[in-house]
Image 1 (spheres, helix red, strand yellow):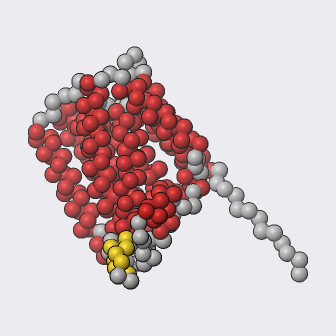
Image 2 (cartoon, one colour):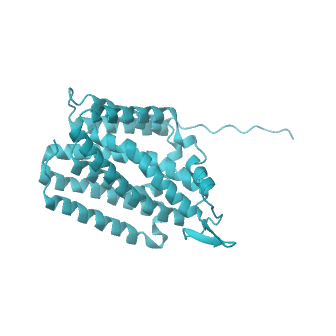
Length: 311
């Protein structure tokens, strides 16, 4: 059963969320976040904000809820790395310049906050009513784990979703335009920026199908699940600026994410018989993610030797 969260806690969360969204929109104007140092700084700010909100959790719900919140936050933050692969491929396929990528990511973040909210509150109501939803969520997570294990997104060169949208809509080739629709030869056409936003929103829905059940694996409290999701999503734009150029080299990351999803699947399926403390869940997630990143950095792809040609 979920606890009754006081109204002031929801208000505090709402005020913090809106304030940080406004800060994100107005503090990154003028192209400053295009630098790696600026992106690293703001990634630290968003992570600090997410961790600081644990104080509110502790005041409202106690220390055990803090452990659940941190476990859910860490899962969502880990899975957001997988989002980075897809975002990068979408922008590369459409040849979106960096200044327009930030606008597209802003819309993507807003859409993700809405879609996650819908999935979380609907999922919470379903779990409260039907116990078999645990097995359904577990099945979704197992399928997601298998998919993550078998397919390395860093090898993908183009987005099939972008190609599908481009076939359904008339699209301009003006990649530099900041408009969503432009008129060419008397016909209104979608700009590549609009196609990228649509692709990001559809991707948000697909990612919510995996990430929301993963959060339910560590806590059933709606307040904890949505707040952890929201704070993990807030930093996506800055995180993208940090890892966009590096993430393609993390060749073993998808194995770590697959292991995290599989762990969440087993945890939610066996939740009626086996209880794993949230702090242990945090430790397991850190080990799985850290091992995959460390292995990627240690065992890098070796450059192919160039063939010598005869004079």
